[in-house]
Length: 75
Image 1 (cartoon, helix red, strand yellow):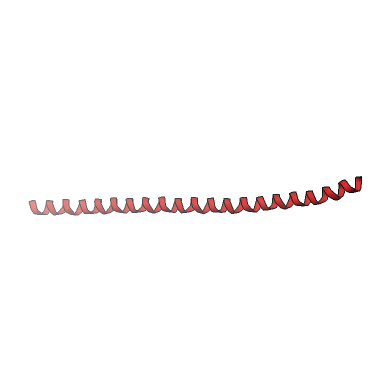
Image 2 (tube, one colour):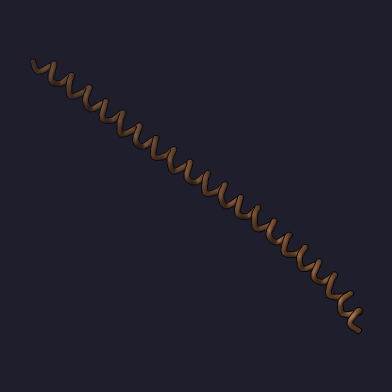
């Protein structure tokens, strides 16, 4: 009987290892997808921030030019 038990145990152990490797590989792709999604989100946030800052800068520049013109007209 010991030979029957070892002949059954070895294929089960191999199958378990294959399943664990498959699950690990699937987990890696999921992790990579999550990382890619996080990076895309971060890039979107940074791009939106840069656009807001550029708009604020344009408004400040626009305000300075208008203020200077008003001063010149009064003199």
